[in-house]
Image (cartoon, rainbow, N blue to C red; front, side):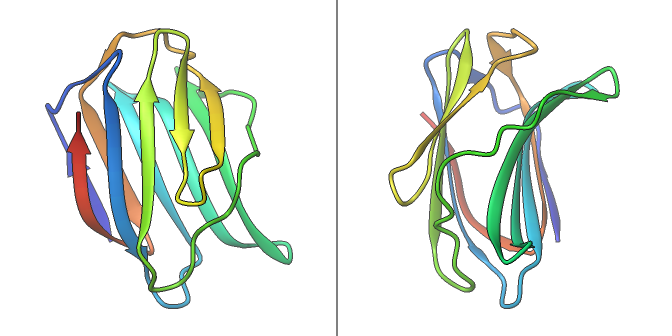
Length: 131
């Protein structure tokens, strides 16, 4: 399943909050915060990476992926509601997962506003909110 949200500004100081459900037997799902053809924020939730789940964070500029960040918890359970909050600062994206763990991904593109978002994979999005 894929979903695009366009022209919904996420500005410095704002927080994007997404809730949803990983589908039964989900393999992965992705949340991207986009800047034109670049991906400012990439969150790839992988349920079957090795023997346990992992979340990989990254960015992609001019077709080149940056260094992966693999930290924080894995609070994603098949068919159970999750909540992810992403706060944009000038320096970073601060991610807070359902289990309270925090992840700091540098704002590598350096923009103070991003307007487009995409979701794809084995997930049903319940809500999408910017405050």
